[in-house]
Length: 149
Image (cartoon, rainbow, N blue to C red):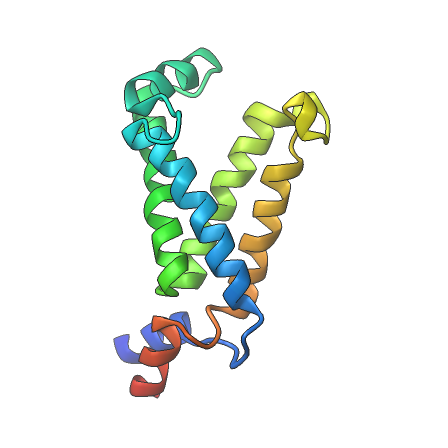
């Protein structure tokens, strides 16, 4: 298999609009959460504060973990919004949500009111859906797939 075919398989997408609202809304949420971790925007703690907190819950080294999670969320969210490399991006975001559920939220039960995992679980479900469907119409993946096809 050549590089062109491999890339086309990665960006190939369903020809529907159903993933558009998932991409846009999840992309905005992920981008905002990543910006909290990376830049201390929207009431976040930035890399230093997030890194210290991650270290305190056993995710070490904390600064690196904050950088990785923040980058996955911020840049992954931007990629979802434009619909570029949606499948691999969604895979990385799904892993990020699994880590968040297991390391932070699981012991608190389902509900967000107790810092539970329901929100992270919803984002995980969206990410898995996008892994399966791809970016859909109105995406860079769709545009490139049509050009390379």
